[in-house]
Image 1 (cartoon, rainbow, N blue to C red):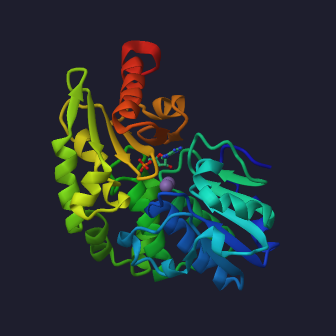
Image 2 (image 1 turned 180 degrees about the horizontal axis):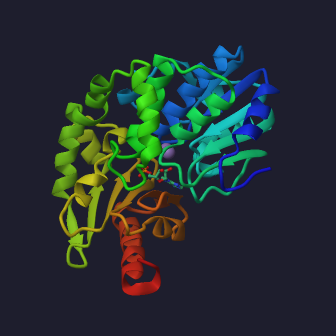
Length: 329
Ligand code: AMP
Ligand code: MN
Ligand code: MN
């Protein structure tokens, strides 16, 4: 059975019936999808499974401390077949990128996810749209499988939980989040060290890119909307990669009075990737969905074709339309 609540028993059964398992992270990987996959790998290997990690994009350097992250491969590098393909934190099939190839090379398919917009695209789906981080669902899954918590698994889970809750600041953060954190601390989580790597340090290209993003900042609708843009040239000037722009949208949202912020970036392949953020209770996922993207109520994304200026105009128009009452709050 599948539904909009987690279903660890069904996933547990699929895992118990498999020997070879391909675990997939989403494109533009973040701490939650990579933390979910690396925690799963450690847990499943302790059960004697043969586990393969896949992602269609490079894993950001910032996450290189994650135990086992070096096992990630591009889906094109694998022949399969696998007994089971397991997607983690992947809101829809398109976010698998080329990992979608693995579906036809696997006997069974399953996913664990926490995006309310998930259309349940696998055979077995465990979706809890209320979970603040997918890593909280992974921890539940590992318990269901009887996997013992270790310091290494704690490091992976903390990475997803802290990054998806904005370092325990988003309104999604709940009592259970801290209960799980207490468990991770008891298993030797090096909190201060990881917190510095994830939240208190930036590489030099990231700092330079922040300057470019702030230079481009424009406000609309009395400052309710903040818009930033980064060109391919900006990335070149800073010696920066696309991943270095991943949290910069928050700089616009930090402005007092701003309720919605977007950051558009040229990806180098003619497409423009947008990060959309909103302050609770303002919702942004409806705007992303209306343009073909998706995500969480306050953190969504969409990728559009066109020039940076044209595509940004389209996103801005959709936001203004929502503000003018053609959508809810
Ligand atoms: P990002 O701005 O890339 O950090 O994405 C924010 C959130 O939106 C993440 O949880 C993603 O899963 C989701 N998201 C980003 N891009 C897309 C997209 N093109 N389609 C659906 N969801 C997306
Ligand atoms: Mn997530
Ligand atoms: Mn994610």
